[in-house]
Amino acid sequence: KVVSQGLQRVREAARRDSSLRFTCLLHHVTVELLREAYKALNPKAAPGVDGMTWSEYGKGLEERLRDLYGRVHRGGYRAQPSKRTYIYKDDGRLRPLGIAALEDKIVQMAVVWVLQAIYEEDFLGFSYGFRPGRSQHNALDAVWVAIVQRKVSWVLDADIRGFFGSMVHEWMIKFVEHRIGDKRIVRLIQKWLKAGVSEDGEWSSTVVGTPQGATVSPLLANIYLHYVLDLWVEAWRKRHARGEVYIVRYADDFVMGFTHICVRRRKDGRFTVRRKTIAKRLRRKVKEVTRELKRIRHSPVPEQGKWLRSVITGYYNYHAVPGNFQALNRFRKLLACAWLQALRRRSQKGKKLTWARMQKLLKTWFPRAQILHPYPNQRLCVINSR
Image 1 (tube, rainbow, N blue to C red):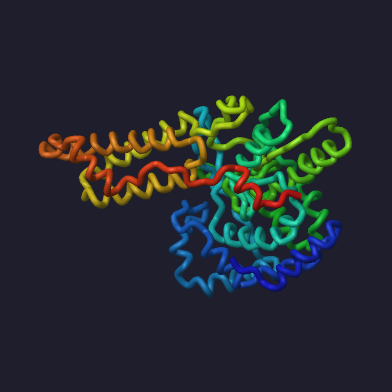
Image 2 (cartoon, rainbow, N blue to C red; image 1 turned 90 degrees about the vertical axis):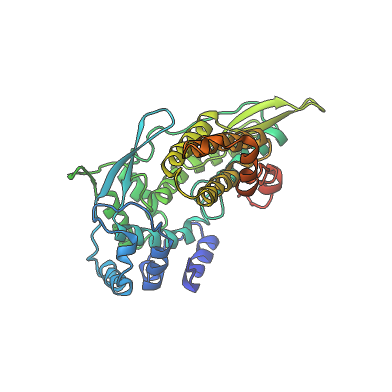
């Protein structure tokens, strides 16, 4: 993304003075920044209530961006309601998501980049969610180091139920105004918070919360929790804690994607932490790939193989952490069996496909399971906690 000299100066000022309020920020939202924000969006994302797709907006992009820039700076920009949709959670319940209109996504992305120049200097080191240069793996590494290498006897795993849908708007704005004195930026945030949602063509207002799925929501969530949780925990453990206290926060949740298993090492009898893919998620991913294989089973074999290789590579990139080799190998074998069944159902000739012949296809298209991520203490040492 574009990091202008102006934003770099904002970052340096935020670093020097943690109480400074920034009264002139909107001028950093330029046509150039809006263009970079557009490019950073997912081209395949579903459209919002405006029905505008990424590719359609790209036709006459410069003219559209200049018009958008003008509306933002003269106060004529109007936020549109989020389009309500639902996805299934791990427990079978539905999670509501809000799909923003394309221009709202562009402006939100640009404003997020401006605000990050300030808040990345404020956020504490144990906050990992939705921050540049930090990931779920970094949060898990911090948990590993705390349990294995520090004096930790108890672990509290917690999440805030319905957090994104329950943030109080008035408090959100108060927290923002601790650092942001530019009323134009504050008004933009208020517009997004109060834009409402559209479900099946029916509009409803939003008096609390911010839509999960909106570009600006993760940053607003981190700002809210910075003041409500992080600063309180930091002050409590400095003033009142009798022993060592470690906290790792990833947005409103903690462990994501892995089960933490505490076992004794064979050699020295000390505790360690093993991470392995949650079995339910592994099965769900295999079912998802199997359904797609049924749909494309008549496509050319090299085309199927190329797609499967990308699926496996993506899976390894996330899940290939130390101690998770067996789950990686199991995932590879399950996909191999699913592909074999799909190829056998292509035709009568396909039924004769043997496992020995299948091995040649796997050797060509299936990457072997291997650990790609370093051990937690090796990776965590490059992140300086504050």
